Length: 269
Image 1 (tube, rainbow, N blue to C red):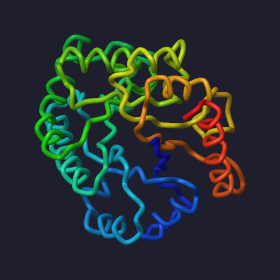
Image 2 (cartoon, rainbow, N blue to C red):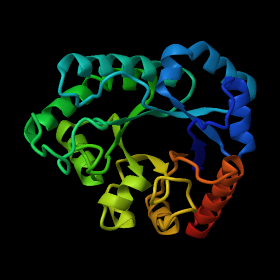
Image 3 (tube, rainbow, N blue to C red):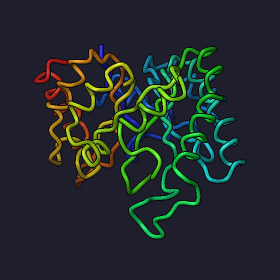
């Protein structure tokens, strides 16, 4: 059964137990935690999950550096932080952590347009970083969800093809593809076809509309993309990763959850 989860929002309480109760009241099945919570507030988070019964379904970010960082000590720091997060994610039943190659580090579409490292070296670095996470994934029963970002946010991985090729090249079967509807809206010629092409690799989904705000406020055809998820038999989690527009953001967000559930029903999920 597919679960709907949300990341934290400004209108959720800073108290983790209250936050998780709000997540449930909003209509979600679970919570996608920031990795910093598992690094810095793990005992509190673990207690909140136990007391509320609201699961942490996945983790996103929250570590220092990037797995594709140009600076090697920052890359190694990211790997070590991610290892701790994965261990703790496994302990509380989360499926894994969302990890891009990097975010905001370099774009081929913005000046100076020539990166300090060639593309073949980028791939070697990514495979090396991801390989170092294999053992902790196997031990904890978790996955790394490798996320392609759009061309303006990263230069290494922009499409499902790029992420899938890294996984195949490195034999990284503890790594799955994280398919984000916002980034796919920019980079994939056909979202449904791309999802179906990588049916054996997609392990997690992020949801945001075409303008990065709550689903239902933009022009993304979620039903069409969800049909692809139905065809591949996707049974993971779809997590909302978006900002919220409007003068009543909490109510707007609640309506967005209802909208997405209607889209899921139309697509046969």
